[in-house]
Length: 189
Image 1 (cartoon, one colour):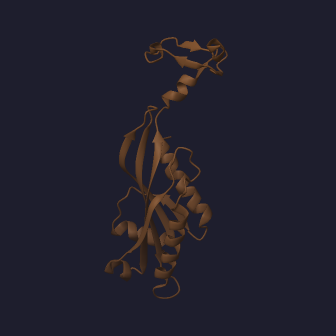
Image 2 (cartoon, one colour; image 1 turned 30 degrees about the vertical axis):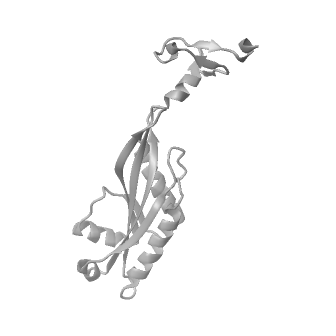
Image 3 (cartoon, one colour; image 1 turned 120 degrees about the vertical axis):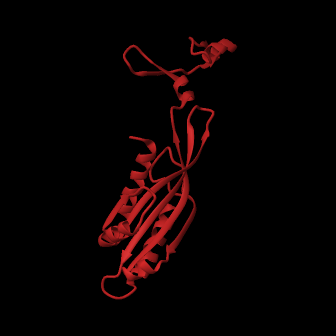
């Protein structure tokens, strides 16, 4: 599974756990239309999570840092009295905004949530359908790829288990992938 998809699933799982009042929590592709709003309204209160890539930064280890824009659409609907969806929606998007700030969602490859912003969407069709939609957005990043530095710290032994070098690896040969020159700390005496 992609690290980005895994991170999205961690967000979904944590929102499900921390906000049990939501009937449905799932992912979506970042776009929605009237048909989606009608369908989402039937499952309300619900939340839909989308990750939008915003750029990458190569790291000296060989990995890439992927900047992500996380978008959570929260849908509520009037059930007992008019405009109750509005109050419920503000409460839910506020809780998600608090949850998102500085949260890595248990992912060691993710950065903390930053630049959290939330707002309500306004449209006459939403009011006619007695539906309220709120959006919570934040930025984060996920590191993907193989850490080449970590690969140089250990090799696989004949039994398949990793052997970690307690010495410093030196020499130009390590850059070409050849057998490294090993310098022990004892050699410096």
